[in-house]
Amino acid sequence: MKQLLFGGAGGASAATDLGLLVMRLIAGLGIAFGHGIMKLPPSEGFVKGVVGMGMPAFMAWGATFAELGGGILLALGLFTRPAAALILFTMCVALFGVHAQQPFARQELALLYGIISLLFVLGGSGRFGVDSLIRK
Image (cartoon, rainbow, N blue to C red):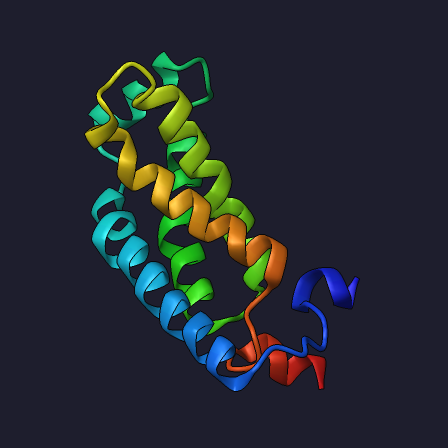
């Protein structure tokens, strides 16, 4: 369970881990404060959009939590894999549900945040995150 939540011992170079730190900070804070905080509280239109996709209304709060809370956790490198998984799920809904019929320019942001999240689901936070301190 500890391995799943906090990742492995790694073995990557310090430069790689520094790159992961920068990516976590930019992506995590970007999604949290560029997108998640704007959904707080979820607007009536956002809730209607979620319900219109066949999901229960509380999932609007779930998306808000995934983007705001998950983004902050990602930036900290705390519970990186679960936080990134929540963001990845939300970005998949955005990409394949909300923006599926739209031009690539409208899909691109969800795709990029999704791919970045997948990176952290698979690789964890790197050595410069709170997860690394917990592992030790």
